[in-house]
Length: 93
Image (tube, rainbow, N blue to C red):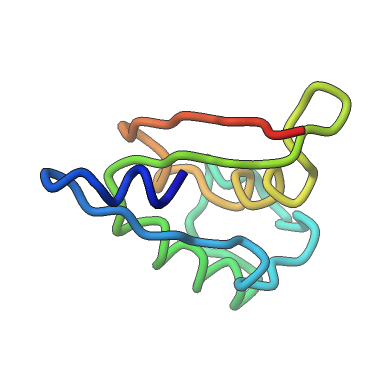
């Protein structure tokens, strides 16, 4: 998918693999909608990366007709950073 995307000249794409951020299972004491003060340094690093993008294409394995838990945790760790950004999800089998 990245090689196809890179053929476009009007946008830039970057491959971001959530496993490179070592996010622990979601364990914040308050929902992220209420605070942007994250308890883990990994979440802060993840926030800085995600904040710089205008949109996302998630390519993920499917588990029981849903995204895998690691991606769900990565999404749950942030709130404001996902607002007003385009998203596409592509489940692969």
